Image (cartoon, rainbow, N blue to C red):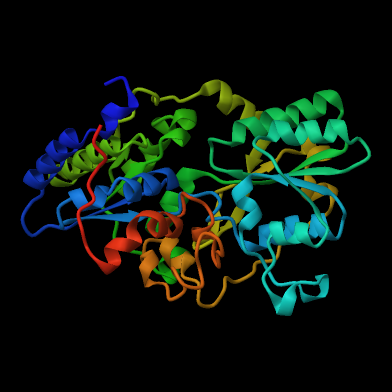
Length: 394
């Protein structure tokens, strides 16, 4: 198949669904986690779960970079913008993530701030579409300190690394990066066997639908040791509905056969070794952090990147001597449990009433790739009146 509409063909979807149903073994349950938020969005948008047999359960994982960003990191960015007077640039969804209340700063009645609300209080917060836009801001305003809040998995890390290298080459001293880049394989391993994750609550997982764009960068090799050590199959899949359904079929077959291998359904874009040029740039500029807090997972060892000492001049954490303070989520927000697959969006008492995409109380409702936002847009109607939506026909 060559065209995107072929990966949304209803007749093909029905055939794959029939194949999955035929290969599911009687009395057996299959629980597969899609780690990437792009898959979560696709599954909800195209009604993939409606086509799967009852024995197959899809679990939404912590694969949305906006969703896993902890409150403490947003607080750091807000403090830079409000208290230190920097120009804070970042991606659009990040602006709306709820952070800590700051009554003294003028928020109403202890209302939780966000970068968007900080801008309303006078902070210079800019929406950018790429880190290159933040570099351009620093060049255009040499008297302003410009800080780029960098988030994302391995997909968005290479552009940040290139920007840091460019800033060093230009000696652009009014530019720096607050790095919140996180790593996929470490988080998957943490979900499976870390005592901290078990203490928070986890669910049994029989296999993973591996991320698409992340795997373009890191390749399938990155999951091989993980699959071998933890004995869980991984199938890398594209973001179209037929990609996801084919991945589920391959996972069912692996579980039935007792195999735990890495398979590549997304072979049209992903290779075993990934993009080595991008990997080299990242290795030059970044190094692993000892630990990093993920929303919903707590502290995850070696799961994030910090800027190497050679680029310390452009590291906002060093430049502004930032100290990190962990902050608990809203007591009624279930984002943490949802990110671990322990609960579904509809299990949260705030979902769809107090918490909506226009008024998010938790990070899972902010991005379109968040489990709550995806379910609000495409799945909440089934909660009231179950129906089979199916996959869009070509």
